[in-house]
Length: 234
Image (cartoon, rainbow, N blue to C red; front, side, top):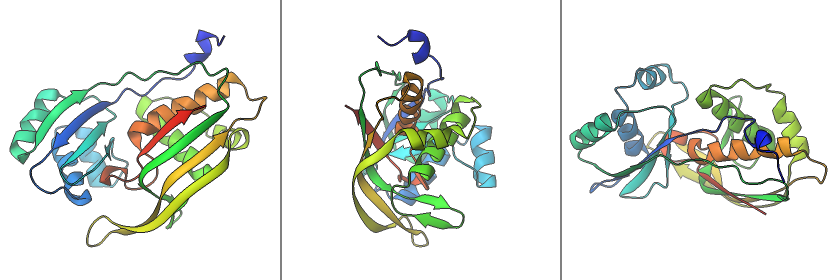
């Protein structure tokens, strides 16, 4: 039985999930603008927008008339509803999911499902396939930023060694986000396997990062609906 202290080693991301619908057709570009308008009262969001920094939100499950806005920082519900009325959109509900780390003792595999098109950035290029180093580095950076927890960045090298892909199944296409933004990206599944001698500590860290990634998204243009991910364990 896993020690409860091990499960509490790392802080868990606690996002706000805003479920939005619109009578107008939603595009990645319009949804991104709506997300910024809904959170415009937050100074951090304004600073991020002006400095082209990492936005503290992601767009998930984008369709032609709805999407989920996952916000990684505190936000006023009153402000959200006020801006929604101004923007002529509906907030169907606001949720505060409580993340949980299961007993990791018997976990042997993890299945990653990239449910929207995903790409990573390496220097000035986009990488349109699952690249373990870029994936885990991105997960670690976003989690660390939004839970305000410093961790040795070299830990990502250990994760890559300890958990590795044994099966991948992808489709790669060019994704049009706007008239000026077209990115080659992938969507599909990855099966990851733990070695037999991996520590429970490492497993807990991996699941902590993946729990966060469900909300932060991964890769580029997370605030445009890209990089959605779900995971399951075996």
